[in-house]
Amino acid sequence: MLSKVLSCALTGIDGYFVDVETDVSRGLPGFDIVGLPDSAVKESRERVRTAINNSGFNFPIKRITVNLAPANTRKEGPAFDLPMAVAILICIDEIKNESVEDTVIMGELSLDGTVKAINGVLPMIHNAYKAGIKKCIVPFENGEEAALIDGIEVIGIRNLKELVEHLTIKKLKPIKVCVDEIFKNENMKYNYDFSDVKGQENVKRALEIAAAGMHNVLMIGPPGSGKTMMAKRLPSILPDLTFKESIEITKIYSVAGLLKDKNSLITKRPFREPHHTISNSAMVGGGRIPKPGEVSLSHNGVLFLDELPEFQRNVLEELRQPLEDRQVTISRVNATMTFPANLMAVASMNPCKCGYYGYSDKCRCTINEVSKYRGKISGPLLDRLDIQVEASAVDYEELNSSKKAESSADIKKRVIQAQNIQKERYKNENIYFNSQLSASQIEKYCTLGKSEIKLLEIAFEKLDLSARAYHKILKIARTIADLSDSKHIHNEHIAEAVQLRNLDRKFIY
Ligand SMILES: Nc1ncnc2c1ncn2[C@@H]1O[C@H](COP(=O)(O)OP(=O)(O)OP(=O)(O)O)[C@@H](O)[C@H]1O
Ligand SMILES: [Mg+2]
Ligand SMILES: [Zn+2]
View 1 (cartoon, helix red, strand yellow):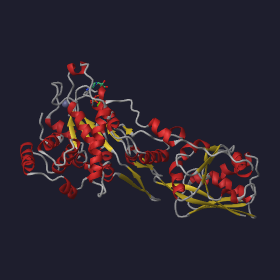
View 2: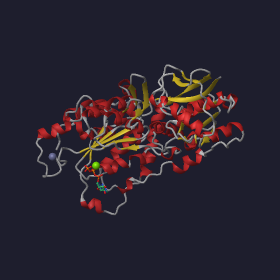
View 3: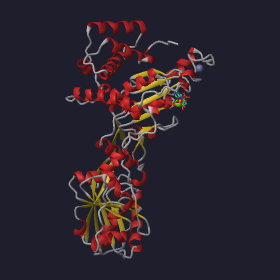
View 4: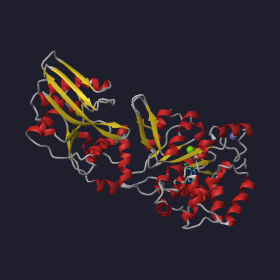
């Protein structure tokens, strides 16, 4: 007898349908799976057989063939256990095929018939919903995750026996979650606030500008100047996540298997701070079956690269592509996958290896050593860090002052306003922020008056700026103008922007 059950698989963070076609016929007993299964899928045979027997059914001692269609894509992981078991139970008349029509089924089985949680449920259910499927059966632990997609009935299953009962005698209640409530209650509760940071007005201002135009930032300063402290507070001045962004992030975390409790919607902007010993594949994504890396886990949020020169050179070089394209493409023999990586990068570094060049007599580094240390960050990477700002040591008086600094909430208001101006301006372009402006778009949107052109010329001569600084300065000046709600870029905006290209200048200390 032949049966067909609908299931799902993943490519990148997108789900696609897989038909689990099963034939049970007379002949030499055996159990074959075809349709490019990987080893975990092949191992399903033992789990399915034992789980069926241990759930009180008789596994047929016949010739069983399972085809996973489409047959030309590689199937991985244990999520096909449950649909295969259902398909076999249909073939031996324990379940009617009609009872699972138009229903997507996924889940891993353990030997006693328990259904175990799997990764990637949210994107797969999202795909099913978009394709018009109305019902799904998932592991109970993934139930709330699946129910984040409104408009599809979610049945959460604890074990195989329960599933058979659900399909034959007693229907289980669908799982429901109140998405609006989770979203509103949880959204944007940060433990860190800029009001804790004393002094450092220039750095805070730079971070505000960075947030407003989604520019990547590099902070340079001696140890203890608060670089890490300030970077951690960046998400608190970015706009609240929208529901759409939240689902995008949750999908990535679902695929990476990083959803806590398997049911949480990610409602905070990610803040990721990978250690500098991180490998290439952990940073940009990879593995035999590609999984998202830190750049994708920072999607719609902040990637903090603390002690930038300490990262391996090849890891830093690999970062260039995602920072440029805002997505990562990983090619493997079996498949090419794309993960989103629309992030804001914030990096920090000391001025030299010992940390004190230009700040204290403690530093014994030679000019050569300093150059070598800075040279670890290549020009092309530096190019992607629009803003470079100096964080000098805070003095004792400032640290001790009881004056409360401006709160994140107040800064955030200005950031949102500036971002809204950009969205409106670029509504007919394929970009949202000033940092995304291409060379031709800069010509169109960052026009200067005579006196501004003159100022920029002087700045170039006096400070010996490199050619690549030119476009950066214009983009940043555009953001600064937006923050002060100015239609045109004026001298004061350019002057401030020039200050934010620290490393383009000659050694100034
Ligand atoms: N501007 C500041 N206002 C209040 N506290 C500060 C400030 N700067 C530093 N601190 C205090 O000093 C601690 C160390 O700062 P932080 O770790 O951010 O320095 P850093 O610049 O990252 O140093 P390193 O280069 O060693 O990583 C902070 O946790 C904080 O308690
Ligand atoms: Mg630090
Ligand atoms: Zn030094």
